[in-house]
Image (cartoon, rainbow, N blue to C red):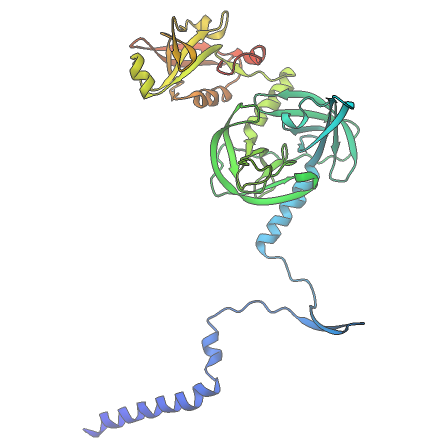
Length: 405
């Protein structure tokens, strides 16, 4: 009985010796080991010989083009769906040269088709001060365009081309629930290279200042390459639907993509288009007041009841704020070298939403239209009040100071 364990050990040693010296060395185990590791797809190839003065070249060629993978198929689908709706825009302005007199200057941008009637949306800065605007469709046909509406505050412009058959309007999505990390595509005319598509993700949703220092609320930041000529073109989701209008890049002094581009959210554009349709112009809502943004330090210095908000410096005569009974400042002071008026109402909320800076107020205005009634929560001295205000139409106020809202 004592021999059995000894025999078992001898058999195991003999088996191990046989495997390592015969089976393993012949490579018979390799197929079993390699089955767990997926190999790259094998492409059928053929040999091709090229003959010339320098001799013969033996090349290996694929028998057929490989199938597109899922990601490539999606990229191609987005491009094919969106491209017919994207246009190139050439604007011509006349500048005066001391030696040569009037000299035409051209600028380029992008846009996209809104409807079969020929309405096209782009950035205002693409066509600003232009004497002539020309639109080139994806099929290379060119049309003279008429500027039918501009909204400098949101950097948007509405164009119209006539007698263009078979127009393919873009599909507009929603921009309310966009998420950082979501894949996006930009199609436009960068550096005059028409029909160029780039891809990236939504990097952030943030408030920024536009080309004319105008606030753009909920701007879509993306790392998709955006360059001069992309302005006014669509930013698309993975279904080829417009979620934004490409407007500017953070270039840090270099006039090209830095991996930080911005787009106006499409919901802002929808509100502007609705105003164009209803009124023939943009009716931006306003409180008809001039305000001063305050933080904890300023609030402590002047003894305010809250350490944040917008202090009303001035209430415009006959405006919405005056009609609602809002109070402007009565005491002249200086912030640095800038004169300010203290003693007015301090706005801390609109319809229950906290207002801490000018961007918050602008966002609240963008969510309303002229004629809407809002409830302002203000401090008058140390007394907290709720004041109902019927918003006025800001169209008449566009040329006034930037702090008037």
